[in-house]
Image (cartoon, rainbow, N blue to C red; front, top):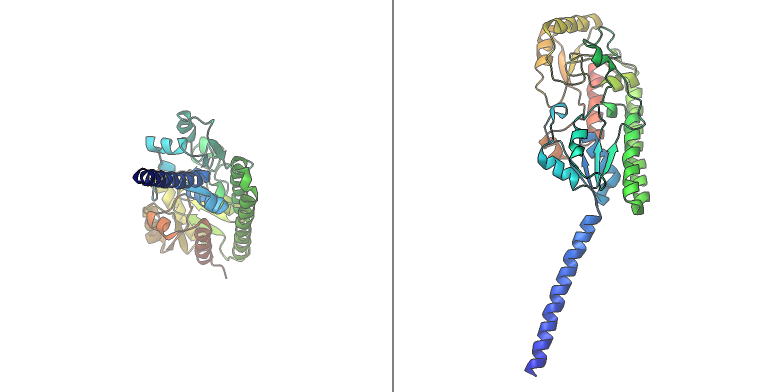
Length: 317
C-alpha cells in the first residue's frame, strides 16, 4: 500500500513538473513568435509599431534625447541588432555608420531594411534661393530627411510592411491591414497640410537649425531658409551668415523663427533678440526625449503640432 502511494505521489510530482515546463516553453514560443525589430530613428520606430502592433517587439537604437546626426553605435547596440530579426534604417545618407555596424554581424539571419528604397532624393539646399551651399559637396549630397515628405513616409511604410510579410508570411493580412490604416492617416495629414499652408500670407520658413525641412517645403511650395547650410547640426553659423539671415527676415516681414528639437536654441534666441521675432519649434522627429517616449508621443502627433506652429508662424487663417 505504501509502495503504491509512493509511486502515485512520484507520478503526480513528475506530471506537475512536466506541465510547468510545458507552460514555460509555451511562453517562450509565444514570445519568440513575435518579430524582434530594431530601428534607428524615431519615425521608423513609430511606423514599425503601427504596422506590427502586437505581432512585433520594436526597439529604438537611438537612446531617447540623443541627437541623431551625432549618434555612434556601441558594442551593446551591435549585439542588440545581431539578436533581432529585422534591422530597419533610413538610408546610408542619414546613417553612414550602418555599413560598419553590419560588418560585425551575421546578416544571413538578419533582414536589413533600407527605407530610402524607391524614394526620389533631393539634393542640395534647393529651397534656399538667397545663397548657395558653402561647399560643393553639400550641394551634391542627398537630403536624408525623407520622412518629412508624407508621400515618402507612405513609401517607407510600404517597405517596412513588405519586410514584415516576407519574414512572417502567416500574418500577411494583419500587417497589410495595419499598413493601410496608417497610410490613410498620412494621407489625411498631407491633405491638412496642403489645405492649411496654401492659404498662408507668409510663405517663408526661417529655421534657426540645420537644413532638415527641404522635403516639406518642396511638397507645399514654401521657401525654406536655414541658419545651417548643411544637413547636420555640426557647425555654428558664421556671424556673416547670421547677419544675412537677419536681413532676410526683415526683407520678408517674418514674425516668427523656428528652432529644432533636442538642441538648445542659442542661434534662434540670438536672431530673435536682433529682430523681435517670436520663437516656435519645428520638430524634425529624428528622435524624441525620454519624457515624450514615456508619454507615448507618436509621429502623427508631432507632425500635427508642427502644422499648428506653421499656421501661427506663417500667418495662416
